[in-house]
Length: 113
Length: 112
Image 1 (spheres, each protein chain N blue to C red):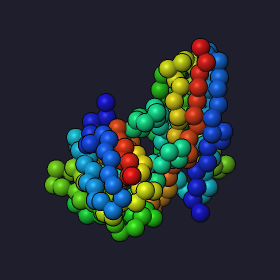
Image 2 (image 1 turned 120 degrees about the vertical axis):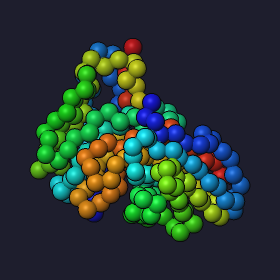
Image 3 (image 1 turned 180 degrees about the horizontal axis):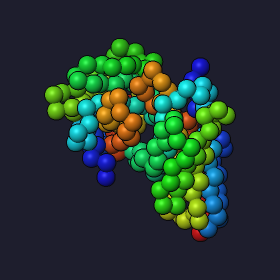
C-alpha cells in the first residue's frame, strides 16, 4: 500500500461529457502528478501540481485541467470527452526537489463511449 | 529528444530462471531512474529508485544497475517465481524536468 488513493476506480462516460477524477496524496508529500496510460503503452505525463499551482505540463490540450488543494489532494478534470480519452489515469505523489520516489495510486479506468 | 525504450515488449521464462530486463534512454543527464511493477489493470508499484550518482540498488531478489554513459539500466530478478509475472516499467527523470518519462514496459510471464 502506497497511501495514494484514487477515486473512482472505474467509470463510463459518454463522448462530449465532462469527468472529474480525484487523488489523495501520501502523507507528507507536497507534489501530485497525473499520467494517462493507454492500453499497451507506458504512462504519459499530463501535468504536475505543487503548492496548488501547475508546475509543468505535458502534451495535452487545455480541456485537461487540474486542481490541488491545501491538503495536497488533487483533481483531474477532462472536458468534452473524446473516445481516445479512454485510458487508465494514474496519480503519483512525491516530494518536490528531493531525491525521493514517486508513489502511484491504483488508477482510475475511464471508458468513453 | 528524450526517450526511454524497453525491449523486448514481452518475454516468458521458466520458473527458477533469473530475469534480466533492459531499459535504454537517450540523453545521459538523468536525475534518477525508477523501476515499477504493474499488474494487469492496476496501478504502479515502485520497486527500486537509482539516483544518478549510484551504480546499482538492491532489494531482496531484485537488483538494478545504472550505466549513464551508455544510457542503460538493467533490472535483475533472481530465481523467478510465477508471482513475478507482471509488466515492468522503467521511468527516467532528467535534469530540469519534473516529470517521469516511461518506457512501454516488459510484459513478463514466469512459467511454473
